[in-house]
Image 1 (cartoon, rainbow, N blue to C red):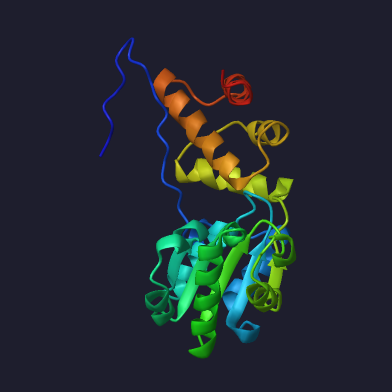
Image 2 (cartoon, rainbow, N blue to C red):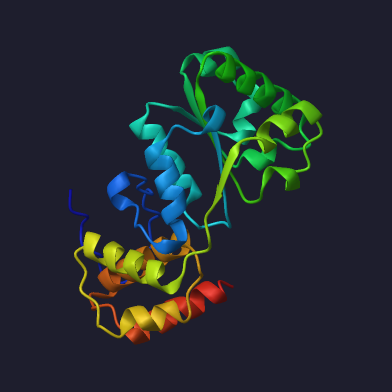
Length: 232
């Protein structure tokens, strides 16, 4: 459904578009190749894998890819406070995002320990994402720490220029937006270095260009980047 055109004097508010976590939306690159391989090939030792990396590296995207392709239960670590652990284990496969956030929360740690053991007993699989290796989470439950430290581990590096350029190109193409050849190198030198940052920047540029009825240009990009750096 096409949105109505903006009227003169109408304030334009950029809308937050939903993030797409499909396999086709994941851009392979050297910095994520090993993680993508581990997600694709499966058969992890003892059925568990920990994906680590900085924010915006693509951990959550890979978690959703694996979850969708294996009909896994997906949840965030903070949701373990009220989770039905036996019901989750019955799914056979569980993907837990931001798993490091269980650390220091006795109820969450106990729930993850129980979930881990139920999945292990039933031959299930668990995929966890975190910003750092298990040893750095600060887990208080020694038995949980020892079990998770024994899991296979793969790290994702921060997105490099090649990946960010490919993602920007794809995001503009998905919106059927043509940009000058010099725009993407210009953005790469100045933007937030994350996949989420790339998505937000493209959405903002597209929204502003539509509102002003002008094509995306370096001058518009400079204005938006300056605004993002100094939102006040």
